[in-house]
Length: 110
Image 1 (cartoon, rainbow, N blue to C red):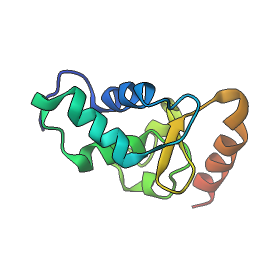
Image 2: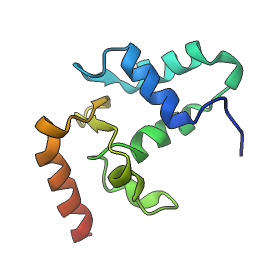
Image 3: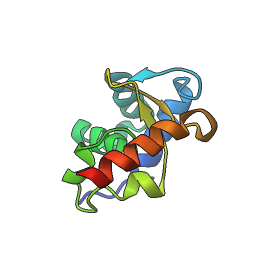
């Protein structure tokens, strides 16, 4: 497994921050491109970036189940939320908690 300067999930968070992800949804491709721009020497695989975003996205179930931790990471580190159109922004506890609750319920049912 490759070792990177910083964890890939953190690269995703930094890229999303630069792209305005606290206020707006950002296309996944833009996040991937920004990571390649910010860390060109790291040669991070696009699929690795996608996986880290999905792994830390509260409403990407059932894809969480495909990860080795069976989807526990999104509960521990609530970073991203999706508009279900391939765009992501940072999770906001105050406004997104209902979506988080729905994701927990959906996860328990499967």
